[in-house]
Image (tube, rainbow, N blue to C red; front, top):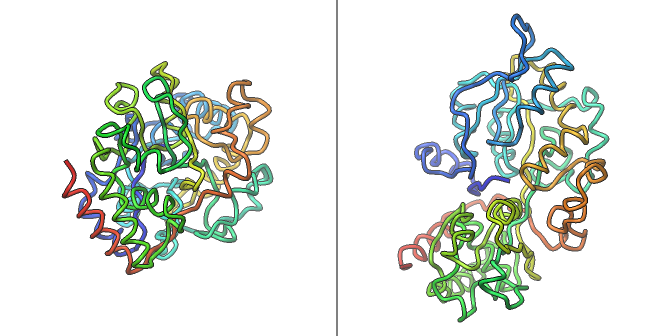
Length: 367
């Protein structure tokens, strides 16, 4: 799952619209202009405009969909949830399916930007793993359906740091890694690590909890080489030996660099994040949108995604058709116990301001 900023209040989202260009990014190159599926045939009448994170589809995946349905897929990509929101609010793009993260679904519902999903038109919805349904941002999945998920935890180069890593304490309170770690450049994720280390919810708005988290992060500053939301190159290049990281990105770092990079969900728990498919309120090709959603819930379609992105699947039949190395991977398929340890981020309300203040002070005093 691409690295994405976690913004929670609607008011903060609106502020984010004013600074879109730097809000966040994926670690893959995005398509800036809408492009058609390579399988589209001249004269195709049915189309669908898909706005999605880079690399969440493949040319082969879309070509097969077009071959079956005759629907031409025009895909374009965004770098942050805030960029996606801005396009929808501006009425630009004419998108038919978009893929926001969990907290952004909440914002889109409140702003009236998406339509209710008619599940009777998505027969393959029965394939969705119930573990990823009924979440707080859309308890009845009235507006959204999951596409993929990831956990935020710790990635470590075990050749550079061979000692066991089991806790956020190993990242934040470890004298052996001074100047050799990175934290995600994200207020919610950075605070979450400290809050979880202290044994409290990553959604806490209690001032004492927040002050204790600030103390943990302040004391950890000698360890921190960088605040970076895409630390793949830092870790694989040896600039850091340990990083707060998204699970899929950590697996990609290990695969693409050939380095001994291991991903750990700390015993205190991490963050669970889910990307979702929604249909914008002003979608012009709604029936085509339903056909695409139905296609995404086929096990073979989801397997294509997992093999490329190494992020968590939401379709129950996917595991059986993956290579053994992925089928048995405990990061892609963690135990229910591990998933239960992980929390999802909720809207913080007015406490967002306090989180931002603490984070600004931490970063201002870092080297």
